[in-house]
Length: 376
Image 1: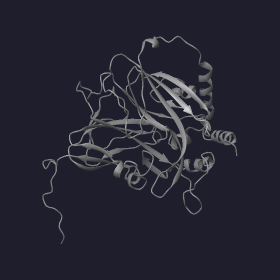
Image 2: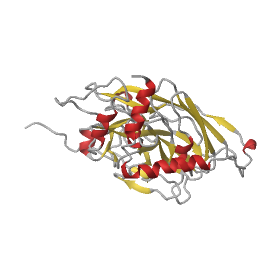
Image 3: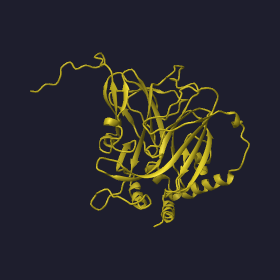
Image 4: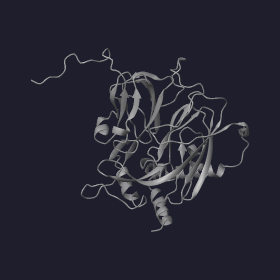
């Protein structure tokens, strides 16, 4: 079957996903496209400095300043859509993932409030499917989704003003196929910092030493009659079976950063005693409840919006589906900290767990063993 026919078949089948809301979504795309016309921009963008940023693979985040350096800028990013086969657990389970820049989640972008984000989105001709991008941080045209529909071999350039401070989800949202693309890995996060940097809501500056991005992902992998996970030759071929699993609302995997164990062992996140770490956590589709075993969220923006004062000293925080949250913590003891979704079934049985390796000196005042366990 040709690439065109696969793409067309997938797109036609995808229309069934939308169900009752499908006509409304399709109409929104149509209206947005009809309304696009040259307008006079109130800001003279030619006077703004342009900064080109190279994105990095999560959990890492590209270099950035925590306080804005000068007036608003145009921050340029480029992302290439990759449809790729990924192994998502130690059993060799395969997934035909859809990704921004090849990773699940996609790279995290950082700008400051009132900066302009200018994204070049590339859909290589080697891909099968149509894609786009919806920024929850943007205003208008379905978050940019209506202006960035790209077929294989096309690219689009979107510019929007980052008017709200916080951490926000972005994801692919093509007409009729939104949940398939999102649950196949096509989502990420953008952080819009206040121009003055983070504060505790009462004027105290919060400056982090490190930042990590954890993208939680639910996957829905079909099984055969014997209960084994199925494999497919292409992403389009997997569509119908995947849709059936998606409609059960029961994930086969719930993972951090694309695979079971992706942030454990040699890939664990690192810190030192006394370091202040900002953890950005997103879930584009399902609710989640992050918990740092042996630590806390000193300051937590559970729904990720920095105009709201953070919650203090949280044990577990709730992030609604379609949202990114942020937690700021100063590590006080060395050792291995498990960072989990505190639905413990999802953490220990389905894969939603990560590790922090923290170095430094132990503080007996915070914890000590009075009597060590002994045998009978």
